[in-house]
Length: 419
Image 1 (cartoon, rainbow, N blue to C red):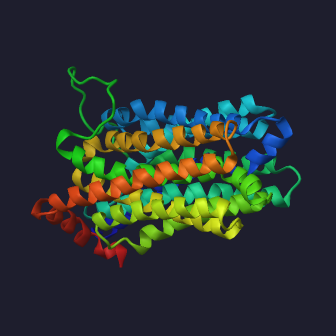
Image 2 (image 1 turned 30 degrees about the vertical axis):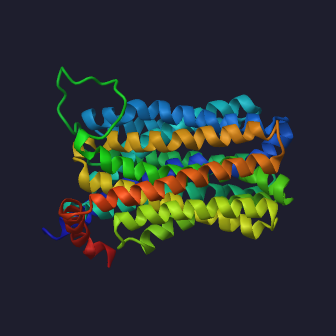
Image 3 (image 1 turned 60 degrees about the vertical axis):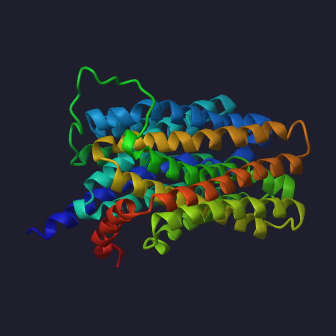
């Protein structure tokens, strides 16, 4: 009987993870359709990146409040409304007839993702057995990137296969979102994680507790370049394929996005036994390699193969950076501050992931396409290189008994699920 309790908890953890996957299916499902909408409705690359930026506004606006709300009043109070927003957003995509519909849908999709990365991922970790917290982090991280890859794959395949892909794609996404909404209401989560005190302000900028901010900073340094890289491939990847490489296949755009996130998922399981220091370093190295390959794909070897390799490396950068950051939060930060710490991580990652691709989209209008993309890639390379050196030095200084001991305990406790 006692042995069945951890297994039952793990099943609920997987159920919570499926709500995260559902929201991220929505988040990237429109990717292969952007070029189609752009041609049909006649808007510029700058407008396209602003549509993507609307998603970031909804996301970051939600993250500012969602983490503290989820820690104070329970995960459901954020997760359930977030899934409702996902249902509405997918319905707007289904009915969209011009770019204004896309703005509204992306704004709500961003709010839904904000709920997923705070309450949804924290619920996944909370519902995992106590001795498998690190495994819970990996499940939460994998759920996010798996959904992010499944969405564009579904969209790309249907865009090639049917005459009315918009109706088919978002009809399916509406159904998935509705199922996840019902499932979220059934999760056995606490109503409150931490008791409210009158002196505690609700509207404060999310952060980790002061003793844990160093670990959060390490995670952000690796996560931000990785997610900025994948953000570029999602927002401007189809444009690069058409303008920079001369390939107009919507299926290839969807497969590229999907492969990027499948790499992000698989690499987390493949490297699960490595230390968080290794994850952090490899994430930065992968981001540098991804952006270098992107430059090569539009200047030296203009072929889809090099572009797809660049996208895969970007996925590896996000997957490993995200896994390292979530592991540090789940093993070092008290669970009562888990959602708020996740919010702080994602705000710091998504701000450059929004601003740099949007800036690149507008730069394309004032300079050559190749110069704009190369400038973006160069900025990410410099940031990732700085992060690699700074985090490696910092973690080396603090990798004594305090860090190694605590992380080793978590790693040993998780051996059963990682075997």
